[in-house]
Length: 170
Image (cartoon, rainbow, N blue to C red):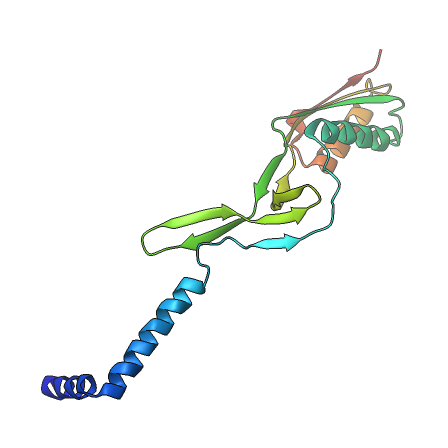
């Protein structure tokens, strides 16, 4: 079997047409690699202007206002003031493009063309984590009202009841 392969290779190498074809294929392969643009990061997307997202303090304030609206609608609550505490700020997660080379791995951010030039593409925004709520209301002396407020807050925010404090307003 080895002898057959050696004989075939010897015949191909002795043929001038085969040598010319092999050289042409080799040159074409190198040109394809050269012009493929493997090192260029052209992951761009045309986008429209999107308004800035709310900051973490705006998120906290909006949550407080929404809770005050819903809690004041509960029978017996009356006037209500709410304070929401958060443990973190907004977290931006950016889209990445991976390039795998023969001996290395490279990560680049995907960029988009916006009105102010190129910007990194935001894949998702993690909102702040709510860690506690204090609700002060007119009906806070009543056990039933306090229980209703606990249930409403825990259901609305998905936090445990030990992170909620309800008391009466002066």
